[in-house]
Length: 99
Image: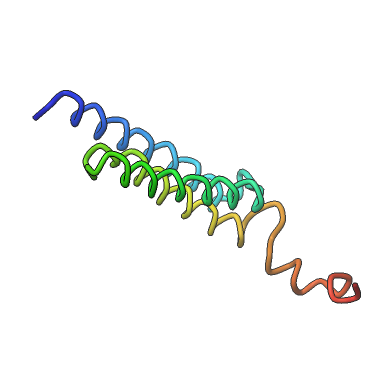
């Protein structure tokens, strides 16, 4: 196996591990992620993964961008329901509908 592939896979595993730890804290209620920040980050990482794969034409080189994109999108979904700006409570808030 090439060293670059090995390093890419190691970086992906480390990246996934850090997201798992953070998402675990979200589920335990230790932190409240911002929905807008994670939504913007997810959008940019999706764009990054698509363009990187298209430019290099090799999914092995794009493993890090793909894994980061997926884990960031999972964190975004968690931030919708467990974040500092809970989308469900915003939509159920009566002041929201009085605009």
